[in-house]
Image (cartoon, rainbow, N blue to C red; front, top):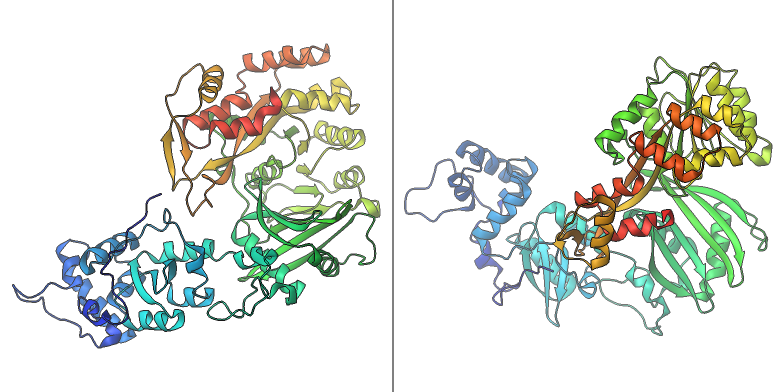
Length: 596
């Protein structure tokens, strides 16, 4: 990783005044300059910006007036007013003042430095501790000439401050990533001493046993949301309580807690989600809501007994989540064009298939967003309704109350729908009613658990749907998977094992010398991946394929026909994304190995 070296002569709290003289902050009594300094006078930071063509002289004058009026530094005004891009401003400020420039996204952040400064203070001053020695603390700041800030930080930490420069956005981003629950993960240590200093008042290794379960659960939820986790797993083992977050589809160990905390955590979760606290043998489900930074988040909780205790899984549903459009799913242009044509059909069945976690619901929601919901009556039947879509009549299935997909689907047909979204086809009854709805003039969108598009056709037959109903109603089938995206911050070209090169060449008929992989950085938590995208194949029903299905042709024969009809198979679409550097050969193999 790239690390900015800190100069040995970096300032401490005893020589700050000499550095601040380069550009005195407005809060220290600097005067607005109404005229350009004469030739031969020392150049100020503002003059440097004007000479570089970054701002005009009039803009500089106005910015200095605002800085004096608001009692802030010139650099803060320039950033706040958007006169200079933050990255350019930080670079020029580093050149002018002589302070090092820190690239925080590739910087190795020392956890022992983080605990020197409470999170609320770091956010207050937009300051990120980077490294620490016995007497000195390196901190990234937006303005290292702000004497008051540096003096306050020195007093709070008891260390001399070595400031480095970074942008406000990068500092805040790294504060979000760095202030993790590392104190909680140390709870299994034998230390029971009192905690003093800047970390006092937080949940630490020595205080977690006395902490309230609700407080620890709240911190876990907040950290999970900050880390973009979709699920939290609380898994008891023989010796510890294992906490894991699912991020971008992969489970990551977050911490290990003492096993003695497990009963109180589970009891608290049951109370919060409305479960029976006395029932420990039967599986239970519940839910509750929390509000984090003005965001309402619904938490679905499932608890089930195992041989080592009760396992709890929490699914996080952010109500502020914005449903993605079709162009954000990752469909290539050729697949997207054909799929949009399917959505324009007045009737028929469109199936989205794939295993759990393949992103099927996201595709359905994105499809609904393409509909003209002012002129069409769009109705959905889901279990559960995870996200709300405006101008759509969404209904919830409650099997315990006798409200099933099949029963509700019959009632929907009496409500004059144009488009019907059926969350999932699980049985013969639901499948036949959905197909009959399509045959009577409705466009039906639904999901099915199948590995690929041809398998979805066979799955319908296995459910007991007559072949003639399938061929007359199904318009198209989308099969999809989700793969992790290469981190755009630390991506680099690299040579991979020969097996990866051979797999790529076998699928595409092309060869590549190197592939794009993530080297690992703070932004992606050293994984090399950040975020996910979809890979797709789209089957459209041709007359030849219909005839083959009616005559019980073998699966491989129908697959060959779909390729002749122009279908791009899942693996080839995935390899196209490997070639573009969107994902990696390793990730494609991990996700699509079931299709071998």
